[in-house]
Every structure is written in C-alpha cells, then in structure tokens.
Amino acid sequence: MTNEKPNYFMASVILTLLSLSITPSFGAINSEKVVGAAACYDCHISEYEGWQATAHFKAYNTLHRSSEAKDIAGKLNIKGNLRRASRCMTCHYTTQGANPRAIAGNSCESCHGAAKDWLDLHSEPVPEPGYTLAKTEEAGMIRPHRLYRVAENCYQCHTILDEELVNTGEHSAGSAFELVAWLQGEVRHNFFISEGEENRRAPQELNPAHHLRVLYVMGRILDLEYSLRAAALATQPGVYADAMKKHVEDARARLEEIQKRGGNQGLTSILKSMLDAAGQVGLEPNNGPALERAAETVKEAAQRFGSGYDGSKLAGLDPLLPKTYKGTVYKGN
Image (cartoon, rainbow, N blue to C red; front, side, top):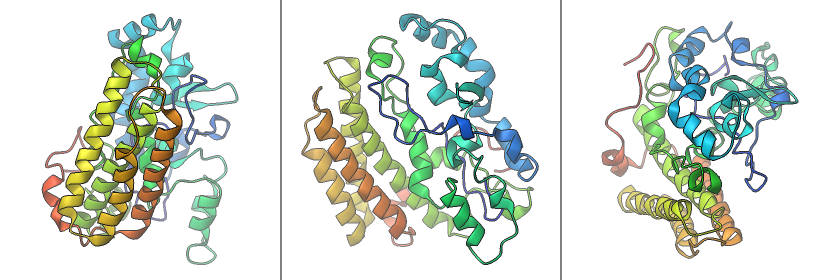
C-alpha cells in the first residue's frame, strides 16, 4: 500500500500460480522479500482492519479445514496441513521465506508486490514531486494506477491454470469473477482521502463512473487473456479442456458486446486485435504455443487500453456494469 495516493483497491488473490512444473509462473511474488501485512498496519490502520473483514483474510484459518478442500487434497494425494502444500499456498495464501510458508491469506503484498525493497522508501519525505512514487515502482511496488498489473493478480488465480487440479482433484475450473463487483465490494480500500473514516466506492480523484467503465473493460479483457492461457495447458479431452474452451468463448462474447456498445473507434480497434487473435486459434487440447501467442496479443492490447483510456467516452457500457457488489464492505456503503 502507499500512503501518498488514495489506495484504489486491493485485488483479490496472490500473484503466483499453481506449483506443477508445467504451470507457468506469470509474475510470481518473491517470498523471500515478503514482510507481511502487519508491517503496513501503522500507516494503514483502516485498510488493515478492512482486510481483516474479507474472505481473503479469513481463508487462512478456515480453508484448510473445509471438507471440500480436504476432498480435493485426497484426490491429489496431498498429505498434511494444506497451508504447507505448495499447490494450495500459491493461490490461497501469502507466503514468506526461502522455503515458503503460509503466513496469511491473500494480503497487501499479494496485490502490491513483496515489500522488502520498497516499504520504507514509499513513506520517506518526498524531495521532489513524483520522486518517491517513481522510486517505489522501480523497487517493485505495484501501485494502483498500474491497473493491468494489479488486476492481473486476480485472474491468475481465479482462472485455474492446472489441468490435473480440475480433472483429478475435481477442483472447480474457475470462479465467476468480475472485477468491478469485487473491487467496489469487500476488497475496496479507499480510505486515504477521508483520513481513514470512509471506505469510498471509487477513487474520488477520478470520475467514479468513468473509472468503473475502465475497470469493467480491463476485467473482461483479462478474463479472455487468462482463459486462453488456461486453455493452453489442456493436454487431453475432459472437464478441464471443455471448461476452458467455454471460458474463452464466453469471454469473447462479452468483449464483442463491449465492442458493440462502446461507441469508441480507438477501443473498437483494440478489441478487434484481441478478438481476431482469440477467434483464429483452435481451442482443442495440445495447442499450447498458439494459444499462448493469442494470449500475448490480448495482453499487449490490454496494456494499451490501460494506459490510454479514462472511461469518459465509454458511457455506452454503463448498462453492462454490475448493479450490486460482492461481500460486506468495511466502513462504507
């Protein structure tokens, strides 16, 4: 977190993926540089307390005890405490140390990056405008305005990138995750500008309606990117391959609807490049390289969108935005 700009949102889940050797690690957090959420508490009291009210926080004490988790572990022959199983740790917990161990559920560093190199730096006196913030990014902090980088953390785990986990373990193939509903719900933490008194719906330094449109589009783009990456891991017909094919098809359909409603030539061009890439690649098993290339095309387009749009010309998307948000919001409405 940063105490120099409003904290826009906490994204949902930890950066790393599941631990099979065949599973890519698209932005793995360095557990040796994790300091833990308590290190953020002194300056970010309300944010910390808000985190304690979330499902991410509570998972540390509840997930490994659930009958569903134990059933999946049994099918995969995972023994012992699930908080020590790498296959579980990578998406459900914050890990720390050279030999990673779970220290919490998904937390501050799951979204903003391992903090050892930037924790002190980001709260130092600012010698000139922008200096400290730029230095924190160089040191590895993922600041909220890096929308793609923060939001991809959600999709790297809410899309299941492990065929065996689904086909053998009977884990769900992914969750019905939509970015706005969660980032305006229980994982929001916009306390800074109200001095810790109010957890506002969207950053007030931006037009909230415009910001939500950008969040919505970015989420739907990332859904396509990570559905393609998941499909690339399918090696045989079955539940996983079928689910990921449907994920890609559903993600494409949502982006086609955005393209139709957006009414913006630049956005139409960006969406066309990714829709063409996804539409021209086969979704059958063992087509990993082609699917990964398509995913990279989508990623590049997502980054162009994130750096070039403020949502002011995307009013046509408002009917697509969620009307209700997820979870219980801490100190907000």
